[in-house]
Length: 111
Length: 114
Image (cartoon, rainbow over all chains, first blue to last red; front, side):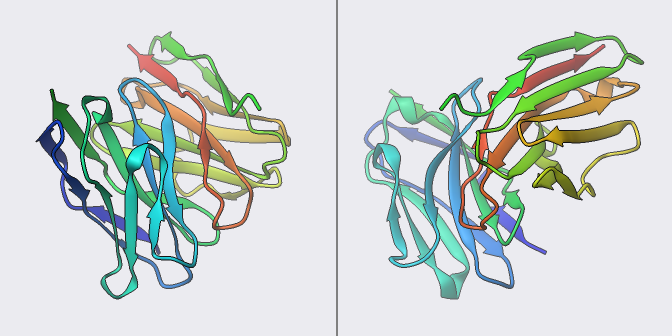
């Protein structure tokens, strides 16, 4: 069975601070990893994904994530956050079929 | 492409009533997923279909929940009878079947059962 663990439930940052959200996964086969963002009152949108190749993947809005196979991790980063990044962030793993989400991390960026 | 379309956006109903949620996946996608989101449980997979066939419904809470996909462009999630603990946001998502394909989510249906 596949599972995802996100390290923090809530993160509060000031604008321009750097962000790193932790994500660890458990899956025995070839893994596909995703980060989704959910802005208040909206649906989930894809930020970035890792399928194969370069373990450092870049997504939209200046986000990036690094796949470290030895640590079963896929942490999300952004060098300088903005107030508009306030949202909930979900890490997810997909094996052959279903997508399993972590519990989510609520990011609040204060102006 | 219009994306995944769900209806209604909001549903308020009384306990014991039947509720039907609808979803139109992205054209060409052959996998469809129903998720439920609550504060307590986060995002839970209820059921998913490949090529209109239900593959895994182990996430369906109980017999009050049922889902159908009569064709490639339409799916329903039905709750009968509804209970207050069913109150949640229900998301439909679609994708290509391959594991590396991301899921595309609809805007969700916010269900409130009083």
